[in-house]
Image (cartoon, rainbow over all chains, first blue to last red):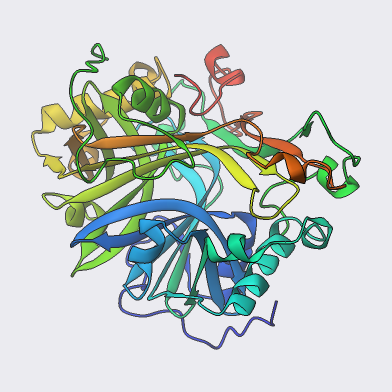
Length: 222
Length: 222
C-alpha cells in the first residue's frame, strides 16, 4: 500500500459532515484504517433511476478502492461509469442509557463517492485479484491452483478513485444528561465484536491448516 | 408480530433473482428471519439524482419495516416519499477453496424495495419507538425514564411496506470441481459470528445488570 497522503482533500459539499452526533473526519488515515478493518461494504448504484444497494467485499490499493464479482453480474455492470456511494460500517457496541432517546450504537462508518470503472486488461485484472488475496489472506494466492483464462474472463474487477469521502465515529458511554443518572435502570455499554473460526476443514484436505488461518480474524488486519 | 402471509408476492421484475451463485428466495418466512437476526441495514436513497447509502437499525412490525433517526437528518428526510432499496447482510463464514476463483463468502442478504413515508402522528411515533425497543431490548422500554415531547419531536420514524423483496443465501463448503481437490493447499470454512458483551456498566449505576442483558446477543432474537 502506498503512503497515505492526507493532503488530498476528501471533503466536498456532498461528503461534508453536517451533524455532530458522531465525530466526523475527512482524513485518509481514519478512512483507510476503517476500510482495512471491515472488508464488507454496501454499494449504492442506480438502476433505471432507482437506487440499488449491493453487499460485496472491498479492498484498497493506494488511493483507489476495488471490488469484484461475476462478469455477468448486473450489479457490476450497472455500477461501472455511473455515480456510486460505497458505505462501510463497523458496529462496535450498544449504548444503553436511562432514557430511550439517549440510547445509541457505537460504530464507525464511511461513505465514499465516485464513478468506478471496470478493469478490462486481463493482466491488470489478475494483479488486482492477487491484491485482494494479499489483503484478505496474506501469502495464500501463490499457494493456490493458478487462475485460468476462463476464470479470469468470468471475473469482473471494478475500481474507483478515493477522492470524496467522510468517516463518522461514535464511541464511549451515552451522552445522557446528569438528571437522568438517578433513574433506577441499568445503563452501560454492550461491546460488539466479530469472531472468525474455529476453522472447519474440508474432509479431503491434503494440507494442514496454516498457522495464519488458525487465529485468523476477518477484517482485523489493519 | 402478525402471522407471516407467504401468499403476498415479494417477487417482481426488479426483485427477481437472476443468478444462481446463491440460493434465492422470495418468501416472507426467510426474509423475516433474516431481518430479525440482523438489526443493521443499509438504505440506498437518492440525493439530487445520485445514490447515497446510509447505515441504520431496522425493525419490522407486521408487513412493514421501520427505521428512525433525528428529525433533522437529511438521510431521513431524503428517503421519505422516494424510492429506496434497503439491504440487510449477514456474513456467516469465509469459504477457502483450492483455487482463487472458488473462494466465496457464506452469507444471507436481503434487498427490499419501496417508497417509505414518515410517521407524523406523535402517538404513532411513540408506539413505533416502543416496538423498536421491544424488538431490541424486550421489556426495557417500560423501565426507562419516559420519553418527553421534545425528544419525540426530535425523532423521526419512517416506515415502508414490505411488498417487493428477495433473499439470497450461500452456505456450505466450496463448489470447487473434483480435479481441484488434490491441490495441496488447505481448504475449508472459517465461520464468522458476532459476540455481544460482556456488559460494561456506567460507573454510577443504581440498578444491577438485568439477566436478559448479561447473555444478550444482538440480532439473534429471531
